[in-house]
Every structure is written in C-alpha cells, then in structure tokens.
Amino acid sequence: MHSYFLTITRSIRTNISKLFSIVVIMLLGIAFVSGLGTISPMIQTSFGNELRRENAPDLILKSSSDTGFQDEDGDGILDIVDDLLQSRIATSAEGLTMLDSSVFESMDYDMGFPEDMPLTRFYGIPDGMTIAPISIVEGRMPVKSNEVVVERARLDMVQYSVGDTIDLGDVFGTKTVVGIVANPLNFSRYEELDLINLEEIKQIIYMRSQDFVMTVEIIPGVTLDVSFPTTDLYVTLRGSSEYSYFTDGYNDFVKECQESIASVLGDKYGEIHYLTLEENMSYAYIVNYTGKIDIIALLFPIFFIAVSALVVSTTMTRMVEEERNIIGCYRSLGVPDSKIKLKYLLLSLICGVISLVVGTIVGVYSLPLAIYPAFETTFFCPEMANLMNPAFGLVCGILMILIVLLVTYRVVRKFLKSSPAELLQPLAPKAGKKILFERIPLWKILPFRYKSTIRNLCRYKKNLIMTVLSVAGSTALVFCGFAIIDVANSLPPLDYPGLSDTIVPIAIIIIVFALFLSIFVVYNLTNLNIGERKREIATLMVLGYHNKEVVMYIYREIMIMAGLGLLVGLPVGVLIMYIVLLLLDFGSVASILVGTYFLTIALVLAFILLTDALLLRKILKVDMSTSLKSVD
Image (cartoon, rainbow, N blue to C red):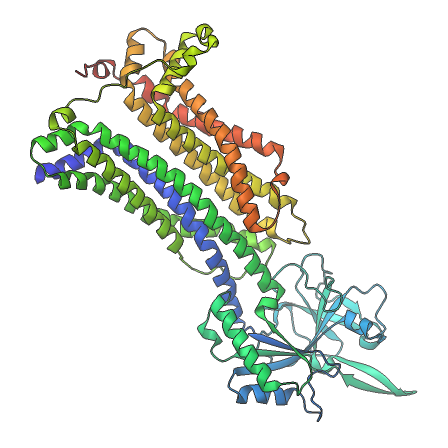
C-alpha cells in the first residue's frame, strides 16, 4: 500500500505542469460561470435590501377622480385606511398628492405656469411620512410655504442647487430650493414619464402638504386657498416581508392582495388604479437588465464549459497514455484494476475539487465587484449586498468534473484491456502514410518543410481536431464579447436607456476570460504535442537543423491549426450572437462592425504567439540522447 501511494505522489510530481494546466483551465471556466451566475441575484438583492430599508410600498392606489379619494358622503382617505387595516390585508397606509403639470393642461385649468416651464411633477408630502419617505441628500426639508425641495439630478433633468429659485407661475408663485432629496422609488437615473402624454418629466418638486394649495378668487378681491386632493395611497401588505423583492413569489403575493383589496373597497371611492412595484419604472429597469444578464449568464457558460471540458479531457487522456508502463507495472505486481482506476480518478477529482473551490470563490467575489459599479451610470446604486450565490457555478463545475472523471475512467479501462507485456513497451510513434494532398500537382513543388508539416497534421488527426475546436471555441467567445459591445453601442437610447453601460462590462469580462482560456488551451495542447514528439525534435537536432528550423517545425503546425480554428470560430461566433440577440430581443448581427472580425483575429493570434514564446525554451531544451532511445 505504501508503494502504491508513493507512485501516486510521484505521478503528481512528474505531471505537475499538466495537472496545473487542468486546474487553471477548469478554474477559469468555473470562475466565469460562478461570477456571471451571481450578478443578477446580487443586483436584485442589493436593490431589494434598499427598498426594504426604505419601507417601500407594496401597492400604490391611485385615484382617477378629480376629487381624489372621496366617497359620495364626502368621506376620504381616512376611511380607506380604516377599511384596509380592519381587513388585515395591510399593515399601514399613507396618502399623498402627486400631480403632473400636464394634468392641469388636460383639464384646461389655467395654473398660470410660465411658458418656458419644463414638464414638472409635483408632490405634496405630509409630515412624518414613514412609507418610502424622501431623504435629504443636500440641504434641509422645507419649513415655510415658499420653500421646496427637488429630486436629485437625473439624466436630462433640470439641475438645481440649494438656494436657487423656481418660478412656478401665478398659483404657486416663486419657490426657493432648500434641499436636494432622494425618492426611494425613483432609483433610476433616467426620467420618469408623465401620466398624460407619457413624455419625460424634467423636474420633480416636493412641497409640504399644507403648502400644496392653489389660491382661488371666489369673488373679486376675495380669495380662498384650496388644498389639492389626496391622489395616491401607499400601502404595505401584511406578510410581504416574508418574500424577497424581484421574485415571482413576491409578485404573485402582491397580486393576490390587490384582488382582495379591490373586493374590500369596491367602487365606493370611484375608479382606483392599483400599481405594484412591477409598474414602477426603476423597478422595471432592474428586472429588464437582470433578465438580459441572466440570458448571457446561461448561454455563454455552455460554450465556455464545453471548451474547458474538451481540453481537460484531452490532457487527462494524454497523461494516462504516457503512464501506460506504470499501469503495466501495476498489473504485473497484481494490483487490482479497481485500484489502478482509482489512482487516475483521484488525480482528476483532486484537480476538479481545487478548481471548483477556488474558481467559485474567485468568480462570486471578483466578477460582481467588477460589474456592479457599471450600474452607477444607470441607477443610484445602494451598498452592494454581500451575497454569495454559487449555485449555477457549482452545478456547471460538478458537471465538468463528472465529464473529466468519465473520460479518465474510459481511457484507463481501455488500457487495462491490454496485457502487462504490451503496456510495459513504450508506445511507438504513429506511422505515416500517403495523404490526399500528395495527389495534387502542387504537392511536387512544395518545399520539404511544408510537406512534412501537412503530413504531420494529417498524421496526428486527434491533435488537429482538438486544437482547431479549442481555438475555434475561444475565438467564438472573444468575437461574441466584441460583438455585444458593438450591438450595445448601436441600441437606440430611448428604447434601451442605460443598457449599453451595464452590458459592456460583462462583454469585456467575456473577452478577458476567453483570451486567457485561449492561452492555456493552446499552451496545454502544444505542450502535450511537444511531449509526444520529442523523438522527432531530437532527430532534427541530431541532423543539424538550426534552432529556428526546429522551432518552426512545431510552430508552423500550430499556426496552421490556429488559422483553421479562426476560420471555424468566426462563423460559430456569428451563430452564437444570432441566438443570443434573438433571446435578448434587441439588436442585430448587422450591427457588428467589420473591424470586430479583424480585431478578434488579431487578438487571438497575438495570444497564440505569446503562448508559443512561452514554449520556445521547452522545445530547445529537448534531451537528444534520452529522446532517441529505441522504442523496441
């Protein structure tokens, strides 16, 4: 037993570079998947926590009556609140007034607004409001009738500073801005839309309820201050805290309560519109954006995991093949087949577990940190939730480990079918044979170095296929990253406000991970190729080939395989983008710039050349005497 574990330790030391490359490639795939999979839950949890802290309403009841919430007997908002609380559907309810300047225009009521006054939303806020209260960002709350506060600056809205004055026309007069406030329900940096014409609100002004009045002249010289009716009722529902915002469970719960409230109130208070958070524009933006991210997080990892699993499986296969003589020794010594299989399965499992643990931690902590700040361009972001949601990464990681274990098992089982005598003999180099290209007239005029390259490519078909597929996968992912940037920058800003700013960082991460994957993929496959062909390299050295010629003997094949990978990868990338854009329901592959194709080719080739440079020393340090020992 001691010698058995000793050979396992020796195998780890001997194959440390291969095992390290397996760990890194799997780690990259798992980190990528884990990171993307945790972005949407982290964003929704961050904004959900903020809504909970600010006691956001679960429902907003809006009256469509000119007199607001008043019944036929003249009773008003207090009766509605009593009805809601007594029904035990709601735990609290508070009323306020919200009117757009376009409302007065639609009623042909002359408020005497200045002609150049932009579209304005007015709020009349009661003292001591506890449901979604506005909070001071700068300055203070109004205490006098001529004082107002305005909402924090959003894109294309009128900018105010504390101390500025606003001319609100004949009815409201001139007001002084004494504070800048944040409305917890308005956390998007893009404008709200008015209720009449669905045009962009350009300024939002908050007054005290007692100051939100209009002066009406009853008879010449006699005026009366008339308060605006309560138009909105913010309601928090009993039991809503048991649900998380942005979930189907929460939305279904709210809709059920909405139906119950509608049956309780009936038509006693006129027509009432029930608005859930799903009708809130900022909330809808979050749902829309995270939905797009979820699609990307689901599709791209499939290709990423496929490439990673392919390369890792190839590496494990080669490693087992190189240890055929050790397997032969095991069998000669009477070691059970189950223990031989266990050794290689353990090596695969150790690599997989290390990759799974490290990759998951790196992914769920690093990628959200890199992407969350990008949302600042679109939203007033709260503190990022300390959320670790590795579920998607764990599932994909475990799937990758199972694939590698299955491949390893099948390779070892294949060798165990051979006799110990066969296994103890080194594997002879693959014999060459006449290829199809030799029938082409051009073959005769090709220099010998190109003939040998083409023969080797056809001779080692498995290497060719694996390298082409791996480079094609990396190329497709890099292309998709740049293509997403092109499409995002081409989106109409009015239809997809801010989406470009939030999608582009994810595209950059796809590019970075894909390029790193291409480095390790090409490095790993080339390293294995060099290890298999040391005898050929040593033969060239003995025959007096210069270092440059020896190096190009290997690199020429790599560049041809990389070129084929690029040719396959670009159309695959276009196909992936077509599917992605179809599911995202925006943009078109026609928006992809021509330069993106050339940039993808240039970057992938540059990283392949970098990989070749890293392996230059290994080729030139091949031991001629050891490599040329007879295989008989």
